[in-house]
Length: 164
Image (spheres, rainbow, N blue to C red):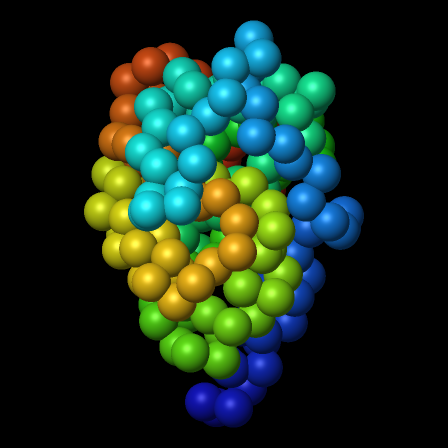
């Protein structure tokens, strides 16, 4: 039973990896303003900055990673403006396992990654853990998580839905 659960988890993780490769990202933010680099740590961004980053296609693609559990993700997650930046589910519990954390690094290094959870606690934990291990990419933490996202009246997706 345990082996089956692990196998299903690995298959779900592999299926949720983005279908594109490379970073495709540049350091410029919306309006040509440079974004703060994550050289010294995790960059906290507001939900409005997150939304603007996702809408701006001229600066490359950001990978959105939801570090909550599957039931939380299924119940409600952020809606993104494009089909290709749909949040990837990669729960904190899996990222605490060194092998799966290394798979995350292999999949997302060199990209701009926006981490989020319910309130920004779990995403902050894993963001700092990845930075401490030398993650090569820019890590953003969506301050306030999905709670702040909903408070700002930004779109959400429920269940298997594709829009709010």
